[in-house]
Image (cartoon, rainbow, N blue to C red; front, side, top):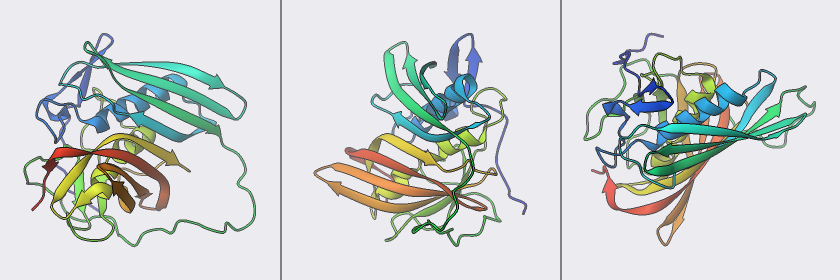
Length: 264
């Protein structure tokens, strides 16, 4: 399978002393001077993994709170080990600029062990979408700074589906780890689950990624599996896939935004 990519080596952030300085393509779709929220979740995942990850522990949950929009400013990420038990480790991250705290994250790591015997009463099935074999989607008002293949069209009724692949390093020339890759892809749960036929009317305030395992390759498939909204408040959920099957879920909460994004 040969996939075309427009990737270049320019990372989203450059580490200078203790600060992460954003590149121009780190901006989000809502405003040209706003950092993309998916990158903040990725930075939190990176910091927690580097400082608190362990080979015998599985990252099982990452919750990212995006409670303040940030302009394109240098970012710092501080972490705290909250709990270190025999079967569980919990770590927090605080994401800041010189204007103050812009987000926070909490991760739960669980000890791997023997899989229980027996048959589960419910198992999420693998989706029926083959990996992409052509170039990623390009064009439109805001070009995603990652490779994106739309399996379903924007605004079509029913569950939205996409394949994604990171095309830039997150920091300097560091490889994007499977956990960071999942954290970056998880933010796409909001536009995929909260889209309407005339565009995206909700901007997410957080997301919670849960993982049974880590993705095995560069491609991550995202499938919208639920949306509810009332009085301008929404919640959406997606299932995350790789080329071998489903590996996790993501749940988001979102608030109505006066200026919708995209549309036809």
